[in-house]
Length: 256
Image 1 (cartoon, one colour):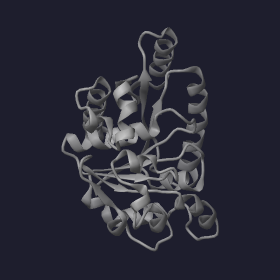
Image 2 (cartoon, one colour):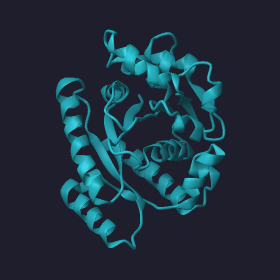
Image 3 (cartoon, one colour):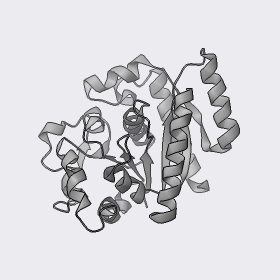
Image 4 (cartoon, one colour):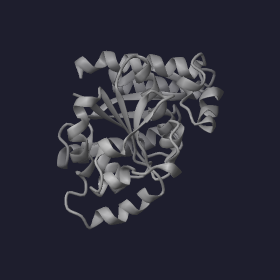
């Protein structure tokens, strides 16, 4: 049965989408069956997986409004090695439409239920704001993976996210917890980053993943080629770090 993880952080620009597509590709590389759900109307995770959001016949929008199933809407990103439930600009409209509907925060969870046997991992790329879309992701998930830059403002954003997760856990999804914090865009030469990294480890302990994703040009270039960095340049430091992270996540599953 698939483990469902949200990639979430209420702070923008911390590498959520980069983490989502590269973790998906890394998991596929180590032999896992993966579905990546793009819940961001910008559709960056869709494009970054090699799927053209402008050509989608069906998207996550149709799934949330129950006019299509995930089996019908998900497409296989051949070069990347995993399935994508894509998003495009239509999804922005779902925010408004969902407000009026029953079970509005449970739509994604109910849609995922029939396909969980077909995958080992379902990764959900959430938008940065706490919106109805993010709430659907959090209500569906077993846990949250938090990509974090080791900077002061990132710590403030983390406090907000932890409070949000506590509220969703208390009121809507008793399974939800923080699976772990992933240090991204890490530059060991910067003293502040090392200090924040140590603070995270002392405060969160083994919730901080051992894998660290370095600041890497090849990872930043990959989306312009419509590929995860792990596929675009498998030998780049950032790509190797994501495959290492994928392995660590698979090893941690039995202890969760």
